Length: 161
Image (cartoon, rainbow, N blue to C red; front, side, top):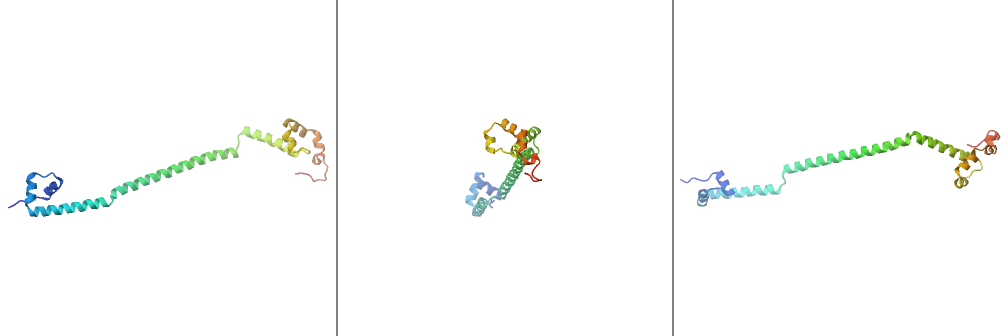
């Protein structure tokens, strides 16, 4: 009575790790040769199936990486937006609430411009060409107020705005 090869021994033959006596038995036994042929066919189908279809494990890993990349991009965008808003907020506060030294300078400039615009006989061209100290002295002189109908008290209640 012949002793046929087990499934494990067939696997060892397939992998090339079987002893010589098992290889000799496989060559002489028709039943074991047929079983070994079916094993080779099944292993070939399994190999093709695995090669043709992507691994679901690999897809999950890639999907997980995409989630991390997306989350990192969203967080970076939020950080950039917050940083930009902070810079703009500081600049808008400087416009709304200027520094005290800037306010004094601005008030002085506004006072000079108001005097210039309200003085009769002063044109923009004469102001641009003349020395600023001379123009201010002329505007604040009492003679310039005498020509002004509002300052002189005449005009019947009407005047310039």
